[in-house]
Length: 431
Image (cartoon, rainbow, N blue to C red; front, side, top):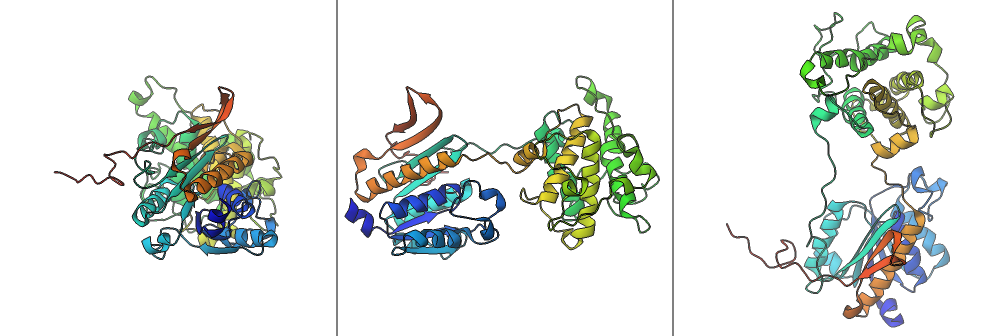
């Protein structure tokens, strides 16, 4: 087995949670020729589990930094790092053919399918993996011997009906989607997009085509407060006019700035306009809110929203019009959390902390470092079996959250290829 490992040329796709563990385990297991592909750069939120990276690496390429970290303690092995997308044209079938095995540490279906198809075309074995929290799995895919990654349909990611998001939210996630994909996108994203927030206002400005346009004589405080009243007050009042909708539902309450922050209206915002000398603009820092796990009151959420709104226009004006929500953008997370909470208050939905809201908005399943380490170890075990052509001992292994039959790891024999799989079988399409 040592010879097989030493002679092997391995492609690793993904250098994140699983990838960091995997690269370390490969290097310590005697693998000496490894290629790594990852398009991502290092973010602060990676540092709690992607242990090859340090704070000084934030913003740098995951693939390159991971390579350098491993070479510090295994200087004699060959690691080639590619800061690129595995779907780029350079990683074609011929590129894949040079490897003895491909190991996936990816976090999305699309890239997994792409790698699966390239492996089938190049006839290279694939060891696939994934983790969510305490759960994880490692699966082996060898053309003609086991099922391919696409032999069985995968669950479709959750989406929500537009009418629920815009008119009748019943869960906090509905408020988050509204704040992120409607309000944030409307204010800071592509100005030409049409969305359901653009209800004409009845305060005399209805002649204006777009209530989100700032008036020439409006200062930032007035603009922020007008938008607040429009989306949390007036739009809710318009929705309440449709009696049919609320026959069997709890009626929402319109929220106006004069009720939540009367002092902001009187003093025109000066009460919540605090200095912000931080490198990264932050409404929380401006307002002295330090605990992201605390649930803010309606007034605090309102202050955060108005402060974040102003900071976007004061500190990041050049980006407005092109912004897309990013879970690692502190100001964006603050704005979306506050907006979602104010809307949740309107509809009688429990409020959430910034920490929880960020998890929902960024579709974050909180990663567990030990699960990644276990899965990486299992990938290497299967990779060694593949290199020895030990077909009878291939295993698909599932990491469970609770012991079943006193086992935390559940190994099963790989399934046969699905004869009607449209990716790996030779079934012809008939019309």
